Length: 216
Image (cartoon, rainbow, N blue to C red; front, top):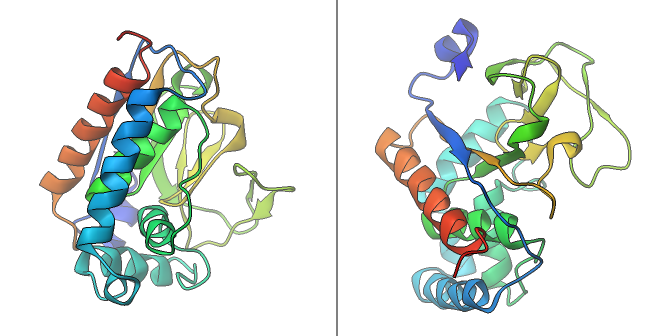
C-alpha cells in the first residue's frame, strides 16, 4: 500500500498488513465457525470486563487516533473494541457470512481492526491519504453518502474511496456470498506494534482459509 507522505508525517509508526486470500467459497454460516465463535466469546469474557476495556492500552491507541481524525470514539467505537464490548454486554456477535464472520473473530481475538474488500471489485492497488474536504463516501449500512473532512484518513483504489480508515468500508466493495477473493487490511495506528498488525493479518488469513474456503 502506498502511504502519502502527509500520512507518514502525521502518524509515525502507523503500519498495515494486507493481501489477497482465496479462492473462497463463502456460505451464510457453518458449524465449525460457530464453534470457534463460542470459544472466542468465552475467552473474551474471561479476559475483560466492560469497566476494564476503556483502559486497555491497545484500544486506547485506536481511540486516540480516532480523536485525531475527527471521530468521537465514544459514539463510533473502533471496530475491534465495539465487537469486544458487544460480547461483554451479553449480546450476540453479528452474523453476516463465513468470510466476514471469520475475519471479525480474528479482530476480536487480537484487538486489531480489519478492513476487507471483495478483491475483484478493487481497481488496482490501495493508497492511504487524507480526504479532501467534502469528498463523498458511501459506507456499508449507510443510507446516503457522508461528506468527509480534511483530517480523515481514507483508503482509495485507482477509482474511488474504499474505506475511511480504520472503521468503515465501502458498500461498493463489500464481501458477499458471490465473493471468491478477499483483500484484507489489518489496520495499525501509532502505538500499536507492527508485529501485532502482521500477526493479525496472518490470523485473519488462516481463519478465512479454514472457515470460508468451502473445503472441510
